[in-house]
Length: 471
Image (cartoon, rainbow, N blue to C red; front, side, top):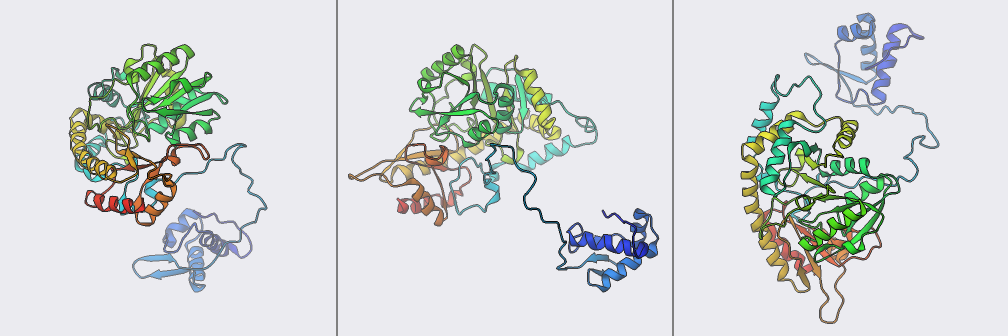
């Protein structure tokens, strides 16, 4: 869009200057097709002759090129707009804001031996079925496309989620308690906005999930790391002033351990005495490979202290960007209001399609197929790691990653995991180490973390061989 300002030279010169400025500052980039002279003249309210004259002048100067039967296009030029230079950028983040974006997995090329965590295998997902369901929900009269949706989520999806986690995770709930979110991170943001004031203490596992820590810190909370042992979060180390406790009891991230039943009751008792809230992040329980899972904190909770969060990013695909949180009745109106203020509501057609995907049994079938594929990869990786001297695989029964601790041997100290990760990366082996899951300078066990959702099964053994040589 250009604006023509009258001045010296008449209308033709004004159109010329406006078009030249648009080319210079990139609003009309090289290759951009300009409107026909009659169309642009009507849009600008000038004569067609003025526009034609401007086009001719710009073409003579090399800024435009014409193709018979195709139109007029912006040519490749080296014209650079002269912009005013400021000594300092007038817009800055607020005082105290130090966060910068972290690299996302989709921003880099996939390595040959892709043992990164948190990435499911998209080749296992039934895209044809999903495409059919979404297309059906995008019909003109489906889901009232001309109106704004319910901020708590599509009613059919909330009902489907309540039934699904009831039989798949032993979580007793109703559709009224379900609030649909754009993934777990969105759920954590809503919870913190409603429950946490600047300066409040929020307890997180250490090592733990870095995006959760970053989120709470960005909202002004004082984040306290709490150690994790063989039974899960060490409740005795919780700060007395903690207002919120964030945990991953079903498959601790990143160690993979399961919180014991005794520790779960201890945590619930602590929260009841301290009048604190617990966020239970159950991010990948669908992929369980051995014993029956322990009952979630949400099921054991008799005091309404637990907010249970889940996501479809791991059991389906991250691009779906849909999750949920079960909210106690007293918090529901406030959390829905926070959702409405933050982004209004979710993608109605996608949520309706997901409801059908669950209710038709497609999600359960997909999870069963994916679980078999992941179980084979997991077995091969665990066996390969267990055969490497100096590694001790942390027992885990679920999820899409495993952790192996580095143990000293032969009187020597265990190797530096950061150096192992860097050397492996140079060989095309993408792995992580436990130091990535604690703040800088915080001591943590030496260990390596390997995901098996994204790795090509055909190169698992080859990738493990490279890792063995690094060790």
